[in-house]
Amino acid sequence: MSSYETEIDLGIKTDEGFKMLADQKQELLKLIADGKASAKMMGLVHLIDHIQDKCVDECHVPEKIVFPNLTED
Image (cartoon, rainbow, N blue to C red; front, side, top):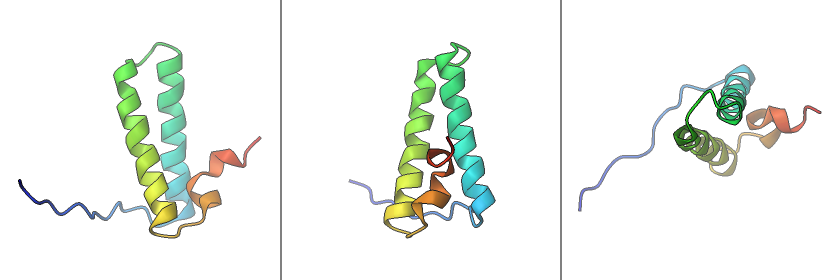
């Protein structure tokens, strides 16, 4: 079985970068819900979720920075 280097630099270094990623995830969800994007795009939503979770859990970026849309309501 092959071994791969899986640690990558996302290039997200600012609060605004994390907000943009969260906004992109929300836009994908909206497009899927409106039938303007295939349900297959949920894979990208899950990938973004995974990236966000890793940023919080392993990189210790504050949750309110990574998930800014959770505090907006």
